[in-house]
Image (tube, rainbow, N blue to C red; front, top):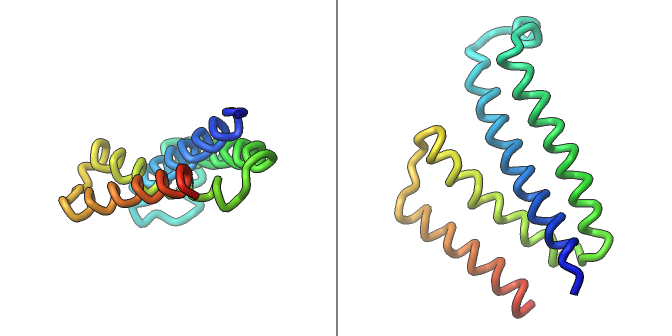
Length: 119
């Protein structure tokens, strides 16, 4: 079995998650300012540009993965971003992870596992 398509898939998912974290940083820096002011602020623009570059790279990795994986099988891995992003958000932005939320994350992991092993 060639593992590279799965490596590309996981890297694409991680890239999407990293981009989301940068989008949150960008959003926190808007502070009601008009777009022209934002464009002139490097503390706003660099995370935005970084997130877009990460998304572009993740897109290339995703396309490489889809060369050898069925979309239906590969796409299930995208749900892992629903785990990665909240966990990182809890660490860096002090966003809560309630017991119910953690149960949901566990169900996502179980669902991805079932689709890959038994699907």
